Image (cartoon, rainbow, N blue to C red; front, side):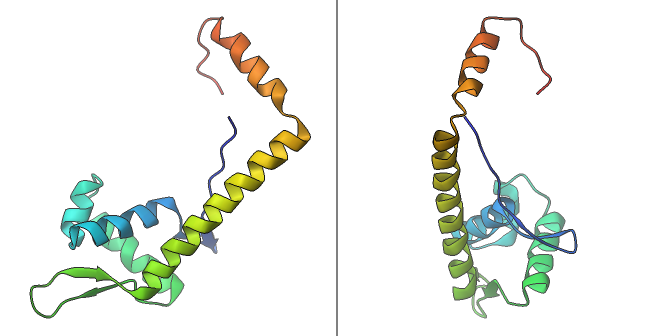
Length: 124
């Protein structure tokens, strides 16, 4: 199986990717940055830093906090970003799978099954 991972960078700094999407989704579910950080086994400080850095690098607010109750919610821009990123990942995965079939990478599957019969090799 061939996998790919997509993320956006600017000046060698992460802007958005799967980890930041997971953080936003956890915020959306938990309605709290602290609870989202706990859910993802992150420190509050790390979660806060990633959220703020992402907002700064994108130049947009991704969350807002209710004046009453203090619940944290995603902005419409954050929801749109997540949806577009999900679509990009899906289309990229489909493209890569199609290209692998077209270019016939079947030798990778053959080699992998041959190695399963041998002793485990931890170098990939």
